[in-house]
Length: 136
Length: 272
Image (cartoon, rainbow over all chains, first blue to last red):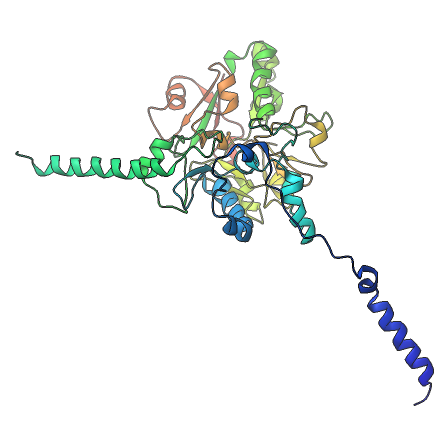
């Protein structure tokens, strides 16, 4: 093989550069998101239960919210009948943030981990964390 | 016991509704204490299926919402600001003083509101009276025809509605609207909002916005904010209902509309 020295050195260098992110991050595992459910409103709840089951909300909250926004904005339907037969105003501000008033702990952790940038907050008003004592 | 078919069916219906109501009410433990404005009992009586999205039982319904503005009742500047501020406050409308301002309901002199009906020698009082302007909620809205994404659409009750989620900020609707009722967010409006009401979203840079007859309030059974604040100077109701307030005032007063010759059939009437 001609120029084998140069080629092999080049290949080693190339592999080194390509795998650089792995070398830099070796042993530094990203912290798994652990969304906090600790808000004043949730603390006071006897039965800690979201509008649907926890697993359903983890898996489907984005689709649920999308369906809600179309129902409210486009079809003037404002109330959600949950699987348990409870009624909820379909509103981020009035319903979701009423309990989940800790947007940084509850929303941002997972979204940052999964590198998702939802643009809800460009229009919808973030809950004020310090004033989240049951009423705004 | 003699019971005819009519009575029997009534009894079955009532007891069935009671059963469904009690079952649903049983499921409604007081776990949640959200600011719900809707009537839970009416919802329970309706017996909706679970997992569905339903309208508020208290919603105000109409075939075509319309407004009559009784210009005669606007005498002091306070009469105008009362209506305008009621709207600005609940809809988080920014206070931008340049040409990039955001207008939902605003005032203009008669000559600007009705340019084609502005006579050289007209009633002095009217000449100097500002006119309240807002989106005309046209029956044939040009803005809806030109919107490429369906962000602007016409609701069942005639309201020309904006879905800000879908607006791409192309501003075709602003070019199409003959009334200047639409405003574009050239910049982030939040720094210009005096006090943000967390119950209503703000808008974001790059979307168009306008008055929507307080669709979100009608859906909860409330009258539009400006109508509530106007002390009777703004009359609101269903144009297709002959007994509605708005039809009553229109049938007994002379009214004009803005640019009727364009054929958009505006639904805001001015009583002079």
